[in-house]
Figure 1 (spheres, protein in one colour):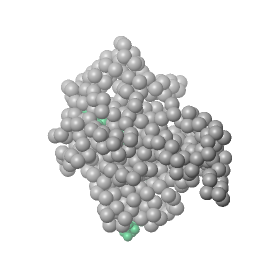
Figure 2: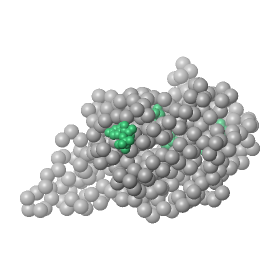
Figure 3: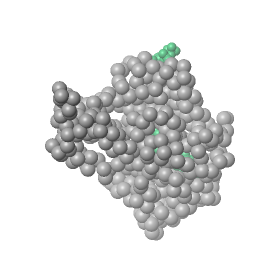
Figure 4: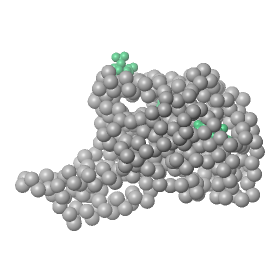
Length: 387
Ligand code: NAD
Ligand code: UDP
Ligand code: UDP
């Protein structure tokens, strides 16, 4: 077998006693749509590291081949350039559906960052969320695969409930400039539940709150990447509106990968079979516990379908965020106020009690711990781009 998680091949002993297998689990065939993007590429690293076979579907709209280039040559990795708006035939066990042009900068027609025709972009965004999700659900239905949707805290709109629980229905302007994203994801959630109820597809829904970390697009207009890139380039950090609106920022490892635990898991996995003889169920339990270091995989592998808020409840105003970036990147960094975009949510903070209780998951990395790790990656990329 090409793909096992660490140690040797598993063998079931005839006596009913088990030859030790450590943390080995049958490897899965997994599709990650949007796997060349920021979150997707970290997820792909994680799935390959534990022995799964991974097919990435990406049209490189906001993603980059560089994010997955380190897997080229791995026989368990495949990259397909494909737009999920078009149907596709594949045979897999699980589908992580992340594909979505998720950068807010494109909402702003007059914004100097905007690099393509905006009207077209909005259509693409809504189309991807609706037709792309429909195709992936059709695929899941045909092959009996489990399907996970990465929805967003944007489904809560400009919330009237704070912090937001999964039971809150949201406060969204259906005809506003952000609605292609908000309503697109709300429709994607609707389709997901329809396929679950109507076609018995096994589904999972994650509502991801603002996430940052290495491999984020440098100029995609999100606030953390903007502030960090601006401070590194010695430009003023652009604060939209009065800067008193709040967001809660999650480091990407909490969402998909725990960097500290992975080497540790591998070591344990290698020595484990030589030390213990355990019935299979016990090793599975251990495996599940270790898997639950991260939100998306915990959700996919768990028994609850969600929706689950996956985010860090640490709440910051944009002015406070600018202060933290200043501390971490450059104490002489300055700020500059700019007009805010329409319908910008005034506050956002996840209530994560449901994920804590049902997925045994909670974020571990604070903004002050996570930001320096992102800054290291950003300064390398900005330097090499400017060379
Ligand atoms: P990203 O832009 O880095 O990744 C999205 C990927 O999808 C890119 O690689 C892009 O090329 C690809 N893609 C877009 N349209 C496609 C299409 N039609 N066909 C195939 N591929 C397509 O964004 P991300 O931050 O990694 O977001 C991943 C998912 O998580 C998205 O669904 C996003 O809505 C969700 N999410 C992210 C955040 C966050 O803060 N990062 C917050 C909430 C939700
Ligand atoms: N689909 C796909 N791959 C598959 C199965 C379906 O891309 O393996 C697409 C299919 O082309 C359709 C969508 O998923 O556009 C929904 O499929 P479903 O079978 O649910 O709907 P129907 O085709 O019956 O309208
Ligand atoms: N924002 C800002 N400066 C920037 C980019 C964004 O002040 O350069 C603000 C934006 O107005 C919003 C918040 O930061 O209030 C978060 O914006 P982002 O686009 O990162 O995420 P979202 O609005 O989707 O939560």
